[in-house]
Amino acid sequence: MTEAARLSLVFWSKLCDDWKSALVIVKPETLIGWHRRAFKLFWKLKSRPGRPKLPRNIRQLIVRMVKENATWGQGRVADGLFLTFIELALKLGIRVSPRTAGAYWPDQPSGRGPSWQRWKAFVRNHARSMLTCDFLVVVTTGFRQLYVFVLMESGTRRILHCNVTAHPTAAWTLPQFREALPSDHGHKFLIHDRDPIFSAELDQQLLGFQDQGSNAGALGGNVRPTVSASCEDVFR
Image (tube, rainbow, N blue to C red; front, side, top):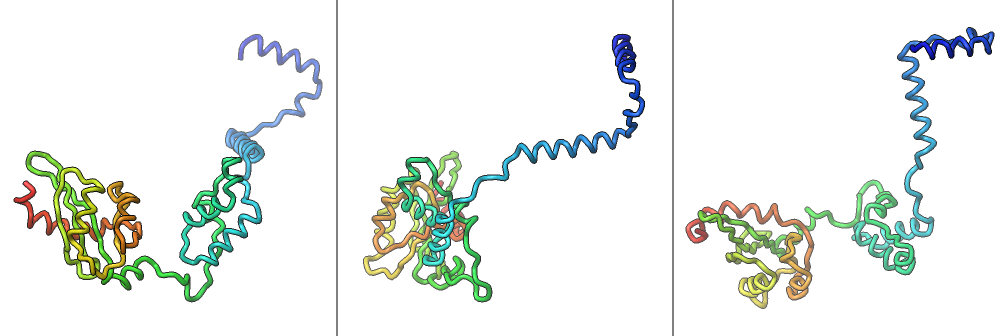
């Protein structure tokens, strides 16, 4: 302590005769504990409990939409809420996200579980009428990237069509389906990933198919070693 600090303590001790009774001797650990508790109390009072809940009518509407549309996911329920309250959403800039809709998802009944098919069960039940397509990347000896389009039957794993291009586009991909599939084919479903090549315009032109929007990397990846080994000379 400096001399000025010592003099100030002497001065204040003269004004307070009973200053010794106010002294409390504590350990450093005790003082740190007091500080931590005070810090927690400070942030508890300052912090808000989180985002406010959705209005009661919207929460009830989410539960109703889920029960009446068993195959709808969180994204589709959120889109349905946006269309229902579109004027309010545009005016206030409020839109319920799929994650928020999932927070108010009703509990599934115990026992048999949900009534809709899970993805694995759907693939197993419709494998014979399902196709899988994907683009495989092949690098040549000159470090040139080529893209191999593969169309495969999901049930038999039989490759129906295979072609190579250096510039894959939707305009190039559509003729591949027309070349590989006859007009009287019995396939009903097409699995592909979310690559921009598979645009919405391409899906609309693929009449007779229903895009499941799933990731076909696992199915398409199984044919990658076979394609690379059998066509290595052609790619180079």
